[in-house]
Image (cartoon, rainbow, N blue to C red; front, side, top):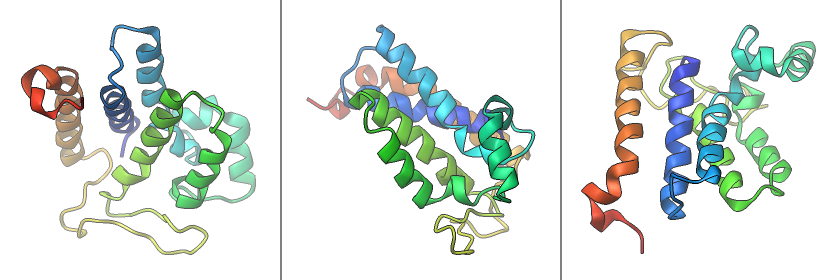
Length: 170
């Protein structure tokens, strides 16, 4: 999937955390959480040469390249997510959950792609959740439609408490 699709998914993850924590959208914490969600949603692509995250985090990207870590392997794995949990425990609960859910949204969405993800890296088993004929190709019309669906969800979520008040956690 493209960076913009992962950014929107990361923003949805941040919104879910804000809603769950009854955090107002009109605070600096919410602004920080939404920005963190957008960025963390794309972070797993630091292993893809030429990606925005690979350019921003060039030393990490270069190290992964030197170690011959391929795209959708280590940085998309459950092992790496466990490492991130340990490294981010010092964050506030709000930012910890936004970071982890937004990051996890990346490999989750990549599971919809026909190439799959090595969730159990270093075991070389690629996992995907859709059959190849239904899978979403990167940059395709189906990805664009999927991204539009995510954008609609992203715009509706903040108003969900007003539209569906019974879903609001008390």
